[in-house]
Amino acid sequence: MFFKRKNIQVHNIYQNIVEISRSKFFYLNLRLQDNFETRFDLIIFHAFLIFYYYKNLRQGKSSISQELFDFMFTDFENNLREMGFGDIAVNKKMKVFITAFYGRIAQYSRGIDVYKTNGDKSLLQQTILNNIYKGDQTLKHNINYFIDYMTKNIDHFIENEESKNLKNNFYFIDIKYGA
Image 1 (cartoon, rainbow, N blue to C red):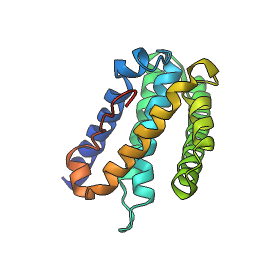
Image 2 (cartoon, helix red, strand yellow):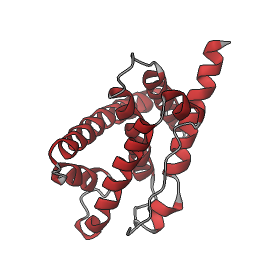
Image 3 (cartoon, one colour):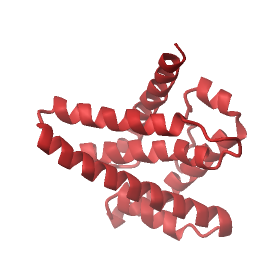
């Protein structure tokens, strides 16, 4: 019973990540390309906020991070299979996804740590430009929105007890664009 309840909790958190990552706001207001790769990057971006929270949680380790990772990659694999990819293609693509995931998580983590430590957001800006905007310099004016969004959501999660974050499925707060 406990395992099933936890699975439902992780499912709900993941659904929240997917839902926010599909928000029209990112594609219309921030002019992201609406394609598989961008949706993947937004899912990783939002998952990172939760993983970062757990990385910095002072209490004991939680299994939620690992379960969320497992759930996320099972969903990626299932989506590839639904798109008609066979076993060999799925295995190759999953290796690419996992490598991309770890690279992005490491970059975001380094960037946010540098920013929180000394206020230098250049590494975080470059990381967002490379990952979210695929290096498109014409859209770099939107990068500071992502940094504000990232830091305010991390702070929001940290301000709450883990139980409240779980109850709310790690609800992401909006910040006004251009504010």
